[in-house]
Structures are given as structure tokens and as C-alpha cells.
Amino acid sequence: MRYSLEGIRWGTDNVIESLEVLPKPIDQLSVSEIRGSLRSLFIESSLIEDELDLPWYLEGYCGLESPRSEQAKRAEKRRAELSEPDSILNQLIKEFHVRASSKRDLRLAEVQFLDLVMNGVKADPEQRRLRNVTGDIYKNRRLDLPGRPTYIEAKDTFNSSRDSGERTRILKASCQCEEIRKAIEPQTENLKGLSRKAGFKDFNHLSWVYNEAPEGLDLEQVADRLLAVLIPMRDALFLEITGRRKFKAVDYYAIVDDCNPFSSFNLSEDPWVILEDTIDLFSWLGYDRKLLVHMLDTKRPGVFIDIEARKGKKAGIATFQLSALAHDLTMLFANPGGFRAQPLRKGIAHEAGHVADAYLKREAVGENIEFFDSPYSASEVVSKMQEQLATSSHFLKMKYGVGNKLTDKIGLFEDILYFCKDISGALVEYSLHSQGPDVAGETFLRMAELTKNVGEDPVQLHPSGFLESSQFYTTQGIMLGYLLGNLYVRALQGALGEDLYSHHLGEMMIGKIIVGNEKPMAQRINEATGVTDLVGCAIDGFNRRYQELN
Image (cartoon, rainbow, N blue to C red; front, side):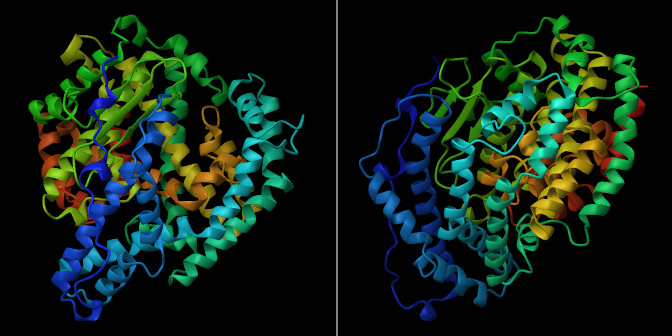
């Protein structure tokens, strides 16, 4: 084991200070005093989340017993107090939103107000109750699907079955399942009411503004433009990789694995070696190697890296930057069991990208910690960039002297699949909140037929048909965030050209992109590259990559 619970710092046991009483009435505070009080409360809230969430991560993801802080009950109570509509935090945010006047304060007020609204939606007692209804179905009950499986059984059958007819039956039945519709419909209606109460047309409008979607961007037009290019390119790549004309997602991984020369490179599958390679990747792109070693140093207090296979661990790879506003606590988790070599390298590089993004962003904002947090769409930019480059022939040739056009074709093919998945998910989510679960189900089936992209993780594609999605995605608008994050990365790649594979990338990312949320991500990309048409530039990037491989 290369981690120790002794390295974890517990926020409320050590440094938490509560701002429970203001020095004078809110209407007598200056804008500067309001800003200072909000900063204190942000730090307190961050430490509370650290106190309460860290044990959940350790136990839920790593399968480890976690120490419990003696002040956890106090932290839980304080979090509930700060979440109340009339809490001191919410009163200050609303007052600041009214009185902010400078350009910088107006931006900060808008960011804080949107966080207040979205957090209020997620914490709404009725919404929690409705989510628990789907949670009960997810955990225990059998669904009105062929064979009456539980949710878990339906998911396992869908993911593991080689019978495409069985998959199709499950898909169509789940889209028409009355029990699911009755569970999800009240959630979407409640979200619509909460959004309207906050001044938005509906939850889609709130999600669009919260995720800082560029003005004038139309979701259906974005999907149409991208898919018109990506689907023919996907089919051409599939033919070039496999020699087969007919693309079926259900067969993809088995077929492409037979063609993939990656395993012949004999690269180490030790996750610690892969993590070291990831540091080399960052260094190659112009990031400070000493900084990278420091932020992933397991001997430093606050760094917890658990990336070895172990019984009891949750499958997957994840990163958590808890208490990011206050100190450098970093968790990087992976369970490599069952991963193929190439996805494991991609996954560790992706999560290390989140670590670097949080660490460098924290340095960039300095004392202006209010601009640390970003919507999900912005937080994915560095990680998705590193994910692609980790297995590119450009890096592998530099590091190991291996890599070829075939591995790059497979990498491009996978990037297209995941982009299609994000497009499908965002469209289904949008239709779910605008037209209800029946139309969302129809949208899903239409997109599944168009993209053929339902073979790997259907629960992330189908909020109306798989209950795990309704537990998560219907309360955060996160599928739109996935799509925007992917779009930003592809637009950057299209704009950078050859600089994507040089130290100029790190210089640009640190100087222009990983700078905190004082500006929306689309504006940062425009100022860094001059790009105004994100979709067009993303398409240019895909076309350039494809042309270079032929």
C-alpha cells in the first residue's frame, strides 16, 4: 500500500471557524464587508464538505474503514443551517447580487447566485423525497420489463449480453415502462416549478445558464452539425480499423480489441508506473514537473492516492479535490481490475488532469478564492485533453519509441464515440425536462439508432429508461455539462493544431484556461485562440486528425 489515512487532514477538527453572527445588519454592511463575510463562509462550507464527504469517499469508493471526526454531528448541523433559505450565507449572496456594481463584483454575484439556486434545487426536501422513490426502485423492486428484472439485473444484462435483440427489447421496454415514467415525471415537474420560482423559464433554462453555455448556441443545431461530420467519419474509421462496413456498437470492443496493437507495445500496466508516465506527459507539454511531483506526493499531508486493485473497491477511476478553497487535499482513486491497458492509461491521465486543474487553479486565484469553483463544463477541459494525449503516438513515441497510426485511429474512433454519447445524453436530458419522459424515451431511441452508441454505459445515456440516471442527472443538468466540456476541448484542439503536441500547450493552458472562473470558459477560449465558432473549430480539429492518419 502506498497511501496512509494518517496523511488526511480533517477540516473541522483543526481549522473550521463559524461566522454565525454578522457585525451589523446586512443593509449596513459595505459591499467590501459583504464580500469578506462571504469569503469566510465559503471557506467554512468547504471544510464542512471535507469533514462530511471524505469518509463517504473512503468507504464508498475505496472500501476502507474511515475515521469519524468527533465534530461530524456539528458539521452536519451547520451544513443544514447554511442550506436554509434564510441562512446568513443565502442572505449575503442575495444582498451582494443586488448591490454589486463593478464588473468583477457583478460576475462574482452572478456566479454565487446561480450556485445558490442550483444548490437550493438539489437540496429541496420534496425533490429529495421524489428522488428516493426512484432510489427504492433502483435498489429493490423489479421492473415491468421482459423477464421482470431488477434495475441491476437489467443493467447487467444490457452491458454483458451479446444478443442485440435482447438489448433492443430492454431498451424499448424501458422507454415505455409505466412504473419508471410515474417515478420520473413528478421529479421533472418539481424541478420545473423550483426553476420558475427562481426566475427561470424551466430547468433546462437554469441548466443552460448555470453551465455557462455560450450565448446563441442552439443544442439541436450543435448536434446536427457535429453528427453530420462525426458519424460518417466513425463509419470510415471502423472500416479502416476492422475491414467491416457495418458498425454495431454491441460488437465494438471485442472487434477493435482484436485489431488493436496497443498490447503489443508491452507497456507496463502497473498503475504507479502509469501515474509516473502521466507526470511525464504533463512535463512534456510544458507544465512544471516539480509542481506535478509535489501535488501527487503521497508523503505530503493531504495527498491520498489509492490506485491498486483490491477486493472491496468500487470499479472505476475518480478524483476528489476536497476543501480545495482552503488547502491541498487531493484524492486519486482507481481500481485497475478489469481495465484494458489503453483505457487505464486514459483514465489515470484524465483524473490526474483534474488534480492539476484544481491545484493550478487554486494557485491562479490566490486570495480571490470566490472564483475557484467552476461549472462542470469547465472542469473537464484539462482532464479530457490529457486523456486523449496519454495514448497518442506523439507522446508514446517520445516516451517509449512506440505508437502508430492504427492506435491513433482507434483513439480518434473512441473520441468520436464518446462525443456522440455526450450529444445523445444532452439531447435526451433536454427533452426529458422540456417534454417529459415519453418524448425523452423517443429521443433516446432515435439517437441510439443514429449513433449506435449504446454498448458501453447505457445508464449515462438514458435518464428516462434507467433509474440510476434519474437519481443523478435529472437534478444537475450534468449531461449538458459533459457536452460543453467536450466541445471546449475539441475546439481548443482544432485551434491549436501542432501546438497541441508541444510545450506551448501547457503555457497556454496555465496562462489562459486554468485561471479560475472570473470569466466563462467560452470567453477564455476566445481570448486564448480567437475562436468564435466553437462547433466549427471542433469539426476542423476532427477533420485534421483524420486527414493526418490517411
